[in-house]
Image 1 (cartoon, rainbow, N blue to C red):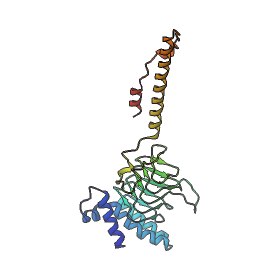
Image 2 (cartoon, helix red, strand yellow):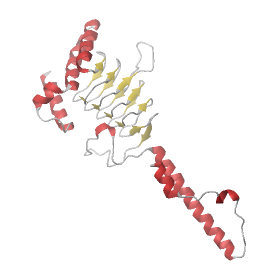
Image 3 (cartoon, one colour):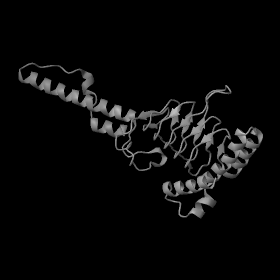
Image 4 (tube, rainbow, N blue to C red):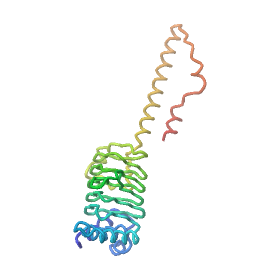
Length: 248
């Protein structure tokens, strides 16, 4: 118990620049308190004392604002930052070194008892503020869930999920390296919305095609062949720079 508590204190000091001393973390961090209560409730639950486990979980919720079902399995060095509004369901499984921010829901989409209804987070996953991870699938090792994302499908290891519904970005080699810096709120400096990337490529491709057509028309004109432009082409000038700014 004390070894786990010491690990929790150290991981909070490493990941939260606002944490100054071990005493401050021990007395003022509700995420730490919620995990302490959960370990007691989880032991009661596994021993068959389900009501006692639920009651301890409820007391923890009143005191910390974090609701963790006593049946959930939580690994070592998990950091619940701020914590208000976090909900972790019964069959959720959280691996070592994960970070969860405020307003996160690890929820279920099935009403059948005995099934795996809640997500599994492998080690090193970061779930940003307000994200909803819903279903009995796996979020792979080192993956990041962006703030307010709604994830309903598996996320590969090292990938980034953003948006509603969540779209996947494969992490770059620099992001997925073992020496990569901690990514607060599931953000990555090299990540961009995949829909935005696709639109930028389409706009740039259209600009290239337009330039090619203009070159062909100019060559035909030099040969004495005049091509009549459709009226639709003259209604609005095509400005790829302005369109790219709108997509950003």
